[in-house]
Image (tube, rainbow, N blue to C red):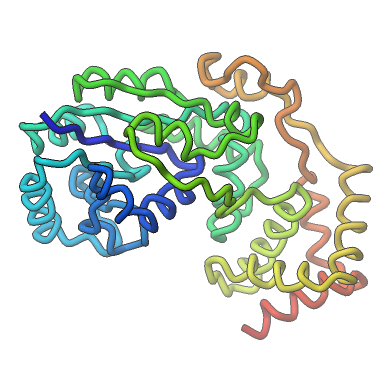
Length: 323
């Protein structure tokens, strides 16, 4: 019986890099007996939007009739092992995961799950929302909103998410430690290659890397300004900030200014804060830092909106106004 390997992410564990690698080396994988199908990844180069079919929620570029056809075509590939990759698989609830299993009655299942420490994951999720212009709140308030949201899917509860795949798919689950792989400078494709028993060329690339603290706070300030003047264009404040940061002299001026703010006024967010807000101890792994993150207080960041004596900041605000 052939195997379907589900790379399920979750989000912010190097999935974009892995999907890009899988897609560009798809022919090599197929020659080694592992199909990385093109069906169901029209939305982005490597991401299999078949996961959205089972998630049962509206999503961009999701055509349910077409995805049904994609599933039937996959069933015709039983002679090969198949690799499917989507972070959205990790968000499937129990019943949806059972529907996923039922769609492939003649296959074995092997789930590939990357474990990331809760402390770095919350920072990464927060920064991603900032980069996309979705939020203007500091990390502590964002954490509180996540906890109080009463989510059906908890991205920090790795134990429950891993158990779901073991219980509902009734197949093997390989758990890889994202933080340890990064610390040892191991390319993320290496352990995946061993699991699927196929060679992958290691490219050692970083796609969608994390922002530095000062850059994240700068983009957050730009988001606040963008919202204040009523523009509300997702992502544009980040573009404006990055244009300025590409100019060496402006980059230096801005970073010196922001670093001075951090040195004098930053707040530290300790691990115990997360526990007090409702996180479970199992959300954190051994080695989580005592201090999770440093950030500029809201009052200081709001004060930045009234400053025009810092040339790069003045130029960023002008770009947002004109766009």
